Image (cartoon, rainbow, N blue to C red; front, top):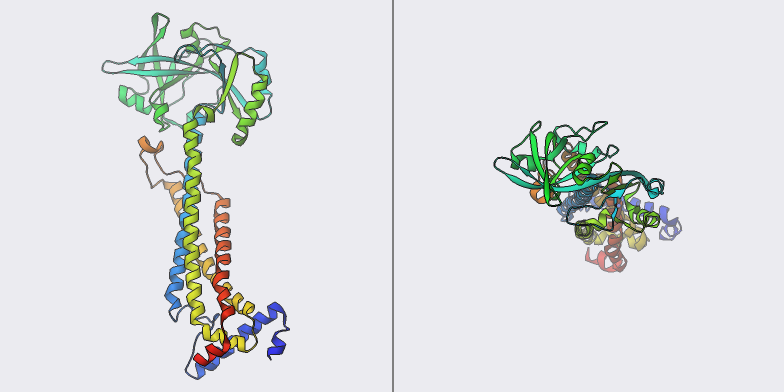
Length: 435
């Protein structure tokens, strides 16, 4: 029988081992010595390995859940912060080299030939004009320093529209400068003003100041203190009038690109088209500290995944080792009948893979459920003062779920090869004599 078993091929040999193990189980059960075999249906319900298998399954499940949720939260956090920074501005800003005084911009001619060249640059999706003017707002009880951000009529205001919490965006009439502005929720609360109220604002121009009485058309909130504490947003023509500029002058160009990952490449193309008196900076260069911090979060993701992978590996390897030790006598009998160490090891590796798959499946279901619940309800809240957002952001993708599952299974299977190698050292004579 042993001679024939060696010539059955790998698949046939494994089936032979399983068949022999089942027969041994039946014979021992009749003799009142029923010791479970590696693949018997009740193997998880008897012996010392049973509770350890359950612990391993739930350890893997929790590890997988933590990995998926951590990646989704950190990716969501990075995406939300980046979206807010870019949404309030743009990907690339073109301005004059001569920056002048603080918050005083040197005007740029928007009729220049390179404007059309920029629009036609590969990777550029949109070009818009803006200007900024520093001033202060005075009420009966409060004085606040502000920056009036003037936008042209072709400005992409999708992000600002999403951030509106009351009222509506400012209007821009066909002729003349629009008097409506939107203010942040923070600023409105400090000034104790609301939609429809007048906002008396003063701007320095040379040695004199110019007063403007704006109408608050809406209130926005980005939850980012650097933006909400200072900016009021209105018509570009108001800034042009305050600075004494012509209608063809602006503070600079803002450029949106098709792919954020190619922002440096597009910026280099733009620098080749710009005049000697203009300079371009990317949003990453303008907010270097913030984007460096966001990149640093990637190392946290790697650390969390490494720790959770270690937990999964230790759990499944421990369960498999105990299982192998419990079945040492059965392994010896199978070897005596002609089974090779490799074919027996395959059974135990498959057993470990089943444990890992159960844990992965439970962990994935748990993680996806939590992520979807957070996306729909936002039940986990944050302090906007500290985190620049009111709820925990989630970026759940199929790629994240699949990669964590496949990666965990692959690592666990590779780790199981080490305890499975112990089977080769089992000597049938010793184990059978001991039994």
